[in-house]
Length: 343
Picture 1 (cartoon, helix red, strand yellow):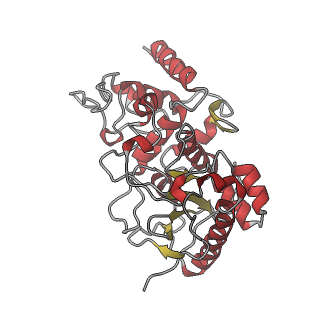
Picture 2 (cartoon, helix red, strand yellow):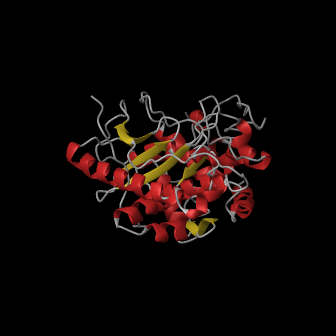
Picture 3 (cartoon, one colour):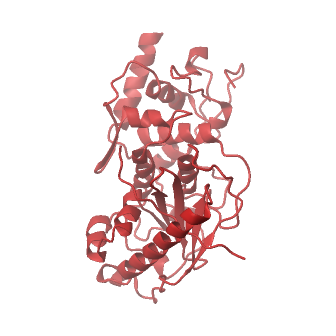
């Protein structure tokens, strides 16, 4: 029998070695790690660059710079719109650390930024504070004022589910060059979805995905504790109710050529096969992987081993060196200058 799910957080606590033969990045055509020398493979903090990370020479250099010592922890590293990350928050991506809530929210911001030039985005990716606001009973008017039209951009996917088309994904040519290392392009793409990350009081992360194609909400959770899931079910239900009120409001009248579905009573289903991490530090890494709009989420169940270090590394590179970070170009220049001083 299908278990029901819930997913969302009550947040706002912001807070193998080198290779003899260089590999070639199949997208950029640039050599992969090892061409900069053996000392670049191991960060001062002990965070290793591995083959699975699939980093090219430029990204490897940025990785080394981000995770080297001797920098101020309060240095601003990432800024996208109103959200920013300090170096100490980026350093929570080092293996063995619990990833900061700001990092997860910045991943959501990156995804949202990538869709803004589209007339009809194919998914929404909300920050964890949206779940927090819903759980605290914020009004629909408050949610619309604070999350629309940027996070909740009107789109026809709400009432007219579309098939996959690579031109609908919202990545221009420049973005593709920078984010290609973050996404597995061999996986099926997800459209017509709303991604909502959540963190509970025990700092455990999980994710709710509202699927307009299947007309269901899915709970993805690495800690399937029955008592805690009851609370997550309640939160998922509240999310469905609030989002239903929002998408039937005046802001979305422009996309109601077809009837917008009533989502408030959609079934909530737990996705099976997710490894049980209890309250371990890997839960935010799983959530970051599920927020990837290009295919890591699956309603059919999950199997396999999480590539924790690879996801952490690629997340750092995509946030710090990506096209939506206003400090991105400056950081890459600083990394190059820093490497020359070490040489």
